[in-house]
Amino acid sequence: MIKIVEISLLYDFYGQLLTLKQQKVIDLYYNQDLSLGEIAENLNITRQAVYDNIKRAEKLLRNYENKLHLIEKFTRQQEKIKQIKLKIQEYKKLIDKDNNNNLTQLFQNIENILDELLIE
Amino acid sequence: MIKIVEISLLYDFYGQLLTLKQQKVIDLYYNQDLSLGEIAENLNITRQAVYDNIKRAEKLLRNYENKLHLIEKFTRQQEKIKQIKLKIQEYKKLIDKDNNNNLTQLFQNIENILDELLIE
Image 1 (tube, one colour):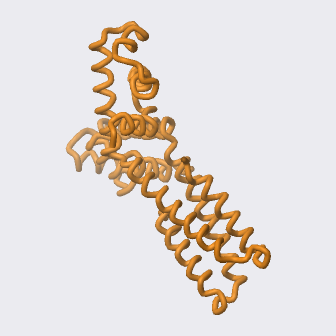
Image 2 (cartoon, one colour; image 1 turned 60 degrees about the vertical axis):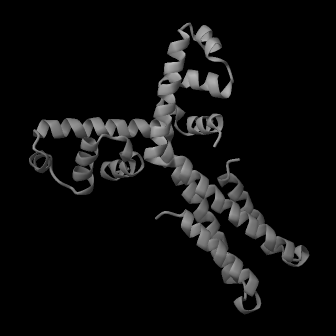
Image 3 (cartoon, rainbow over the protein chains, first blue to last red; image 1 turned 90 degrees about the horizontal axis):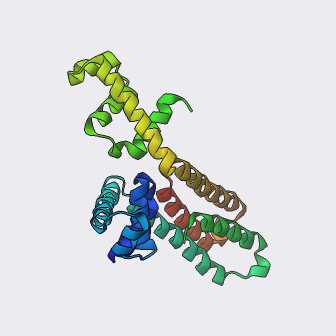
């Protein structure tokens, strides 16, 4: 995975476990795309301090995923939910809607719940 | 929620973020149902140290849930998956299986995937 995508994803899942300063530097660097110099100026700390904070935060975020595997589990789960959606969509193509109102309604209900489960 | 159930659940979700000693005392106290005295003897530390470790670990576990809300999200998600299962089961009662082989197969496939998503 490209590092910027990897860290943004890790930050979505585990950002709340970082200190406020670590959250700030990760957000500014990876989400807002500011340079180390700009962040240093913004937070009134040295460029080296920004760099150290980012490196420390990245290490913590990776460490959380190594322990909890939330992204791994989430990705697997989303895949399964998409599989169900695909199966229903394939079946819907086969049925005659006018003659299967109950079934059409059932599929619609299931799809609505699946959409709530899918975060995209 | 009863405290023993609450802490066991928190431990399932966030136990990996505790130190090995904290994991040990929580497991022995809440899952294995040992007394403070028995744990103290078992780990060769004082009863007070066991108590302090448990209190510290409980606080950390609750803190992780307050920040990440994994149990809250997980519970909500499991509810939705169960809703889909119920809807399918209700519909299956209505259909004549012999005349709806494709549909029966579809429902079986969906249920299999839902069962993988349901951790009970």
